[in-house]
Image (tube, rainbow, N blue to C red):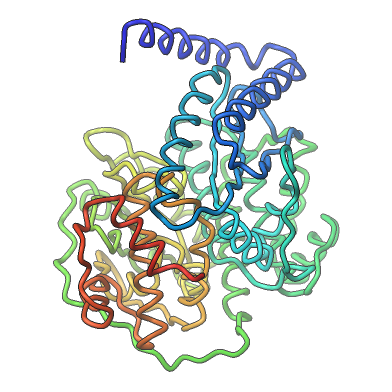
Length: 494
């Protein structure tokens, strides 16, 4: 990188910082205008550099949720299919250079680009249109270049999305922890993600969508606290101002929803004739911060505390499960959660405050410790639990470490594991994500192929078993390009 480029990038970064600082005081319409102009310029660069781009969709909406200076722009780029993975790699190398140029010239905002080849996009779109949660994302996509790409899919979503439910719940916890630890009182994400869970609950039970009033009446009939319901749906009107106890009420009532769905969740064509296999794994190491947290935590209304570690690469990334009893009264729950909040600062990584991140970045930048709060009843909802560290339900049963309380096991349904593998199409081209996430995609595809062939679900020993059945991998597994070529040729459905 020459001196001129360094100076330019430095100036661009300064402009970005200034824009973020002044965005709260400039007119909103001006902030949105700058976003839209920058987006148009970025797209023109991408199309000029990569003529194989067939369509571009914008996932972000410029609605009341959009905040210039802090909101991101998410776009999906659909690229013409290539003849084989070697040509895909060459095209993708050109794409990365074009994206780097476009985003370097994009001084005001962060833009996340999701590239997909045409055939993969069709699978991704069809699968996600079936799912409550993802269907809303698909419906709201706006075509901003090229032709729309229709797919055959149900008119109405029919399946619960374990990914959507757990991702939304963990995103709520991110906002809660940031409120408690850093005094960041941003309630909008809590409202938005809670509404996703409530909508999923409503559609699952009623087989159709409804209005906000329908949601309110439905929640009331399901035994959700009326005071919480009224306060929750009045949040936009009250400019999202709440007292701290509202955070606890939200966690409590969402867990009640998970308990109800979990009891009612009976997938069709269920076949539980399968086996989960895991080779012996070294015990999760002692983490002083977690040990201190557990020792100092008053556990009057804690049923169990467990820790799980990411299952595939064994990186320093952990879920700390704080589990309350199933039939716990609100006041008891409230006292226990307040106690948890008071001890959160003990959880440190690399001598810093606990790093609270969105799920999509967790375990990409280890070390990480993420405390997740469930009732024992919610823990029975295996479809949702399974979307922790990807196949988290078997990971919890086989590889977790109990730190306190009762022994717990998750009842796992075969269809949950199959649906988890199917959602592999939620990700974009493997070469576009960080290498760790791309490896996870490879492992997931290996597990899926083994599962279909043997009716056995191999967790942390999947690669070894795969080679016994399908032959040795004749390449250096740490060579990313060769791993990608094998993945495209042998592991994905055509």
